[in-house]
Each structure stands twice: as structure tokens, then as C-alpha cells.
Length: 298
Image (cartoon, rainbow, N blue to C red; front, side, top):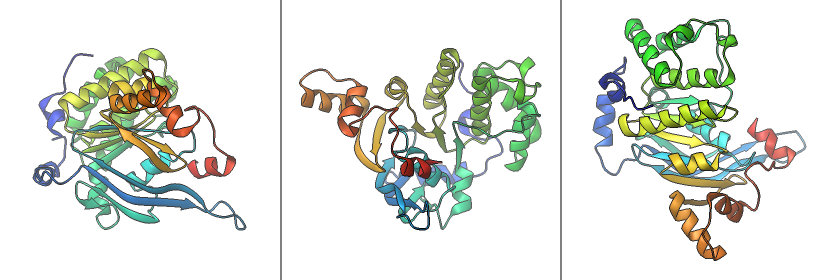
């Protein structure tokens, strides 16, 4: 995909009134797009069992325009962290800000600045992609006519032709549905886009389409992107920085090249991102954790 976003999509003017304020805030060089300070989250999994710590004293800082990857084995806390950022879970400890807005004190302002794509996107399955996206547009107060035009353009960039947008979602493949989910998130022109394993389960062609579109966003859109993934090649390709979680804690953070260089010095040879992951977590990316930790991720 070589096309670029229209000026409307690039500048995020599709029904949004917050971006002038966002530009003013972001002009302060000291203000990050996302600030996570000493955040912790615990889950109670039974009356007689100790709470499970899913996130433990995690701190991160993302600048505007970053694509920041979060890697970790199943149950390491990736999805919990994404849910904390999106406001779907409350913090037990710490502070979280989106462009200077506190996630708890300024909840509505934060919600207007972010959108999230999960590995299992929810739709009205009997409705078409167009109907689902226009419904979402109404929830955000977007102009219907412009939302329809933007929907067609975004879906086309993701490889979904106009003739498919009128078919029920339930008749579309898993890959096509995930593309619709990404289009729905982008339709609201989010300043912070949370992509929680957006390419998991996709066929190779659909995965490449989504990865190319994320790269396009990096060069033409003002969004800051947080990406969790189980695909190390995808993380190396897309992410400017990577944070590795293990047992809910940050165990490493750097650029992909920086992580591989440091690990290579420890191993005495050129390292891959898989070597990095094994070095800092002691397990494969697809390894499961024990049952209690897995429950906290559901």
C-alpha cells in the first residue's frame, strides 16, 4: 500500500475538536504522549487465595508519534496494561497520563483521545462494516456523510473493496474483521492508538496489509501507537522502542537494535530479537504462565 492519508485523516479533523488543544499541549517539549509512573494492578481470584499481581510498578514514557512495542509471554501483563491505559481497568497504584490528562481525574478527556483495537474485536455481526462504522461514528458525534467517505477510504487502504462493505460482518474472514476493527478505531482520529495483538491469527497477506497500514500511519498521521504482539519480526519492523514485560514487571526497554546489541555482547555473538526475549524472560514468547496468572489476563 503506497497511498497516503487525505489531509482530513492526516490532521484528524473528522469531527474532532480536541486536536487544537492537543497541539497546544504537545508543543510543550516536556509533555509525553503517554506517561506511566509506578503503576500496579492486582486481581482477586478467590476468597481464600492471595491476590494475583498482573502489573507491578511499571513505568513507561512515550513521545508523540512513537510506535512503542510491548512484548511478553502469555500472562505477562500486556493486555492488562493496555486495559489500564484505555480506562477499562482502574489503577491500584501509580499514575497514568495521556497528553497531560490524568486517567482518573480527566477520564472523559482521555477517552476522547484514545481508541483501542483488541485481538477479539466486538461487532454487530449481522450488520455490515459500513453500518458498524457509521454506528461508531454517531457515538463519537462525527458527521455521517464525512464518516461514510472516510470509512470507504480507510477500508480501501486496508484492502477491503467498496463492494464488500455492505456484506454482514459474520460473512467476512477473521482477517477482514480485524481490518474493519482497525478502520473503526482510526475513524475517530485517535491521538493515542492502542493495538493489542492486531495481527494475531491473520493470514500472511492480511498481516502484511495491516503492518503496511501501521507504517503508513507512522509517516502520515499524528497518532502515537502502542503495539502488543507475539510476532517478533513485526515488533522489529514497526517499533521504534520495545518494552519487555515478565511477570508483570518491566525487564528491558530500548530500541530493537539496542536490545539486540546489548544481548549480543552478553552472548558473544550477533543476537536476534528472539535471543533478547529468551535472555530477559527465560522462556519462549508463546510459553504459558501458571493458571493463576492466566486468569488475571482474561
